[in-house]
Length: 224
Image 1 (cartoon, rainbow, N blue to C red):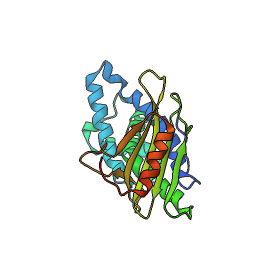
Image 2 (cartoon, helix red, strand yellow; image 1 turned 45 degrees about the horizontal axis):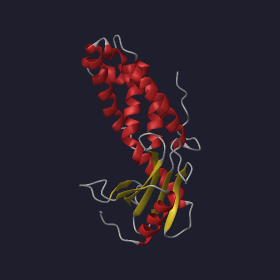
Image 3 (spheres, rainbow, N blue to C red; image 1 turned 180 degrees about the vertical axis):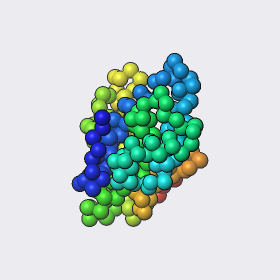
Image 4 (tube, rainbow, N blue to C red; image 1 turned 90 degrees about the vertical axis):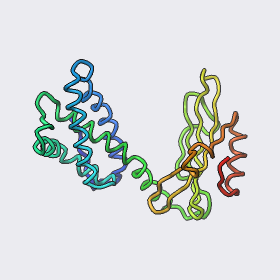
């Protein structure tokens, strides 16, 4: 049903991202029985939770999860054999596997993204603020989001620049958020853990947004 890309491929992160979309789709099927059979839903949830616990022991990287997927059928049966509560009777093993891997992927998404950021930054010689990620139209479009991530490795800071549509899709809202950047694993975190949105600002135009970005590049981080 699923293709199994090699963990040694040129881009395991991209391969995993493609698989994650399939996992998310089949995860819906795994839990669909809950609409008419609460007992089956509870069994499915119990099994998937146990499978995710097992996946946590397999490692925290993209290659680790790809390697685990190559043996997902064995993993499902190993979980089933580990405890009578995890019986596969009446359940879809492939759907259970997809649901478990989808959940584990969501847990690892920021770790995997962090590894990709470090790869991108390693290829850049620039000192100071650099664009690590960018997609969409910078000027803003209600129907096409803009995303840009700027990182200053030396200061351990990042700026997340994005756009989204207003409530009636007649205009674009521009958002800028200051974040901490961890140079060890490439992950991002709020500057103020107790108030994660405290360093985010919104603007009506791209020009206003970019003026604020310019200001932040030279300013020390502090909650608004």
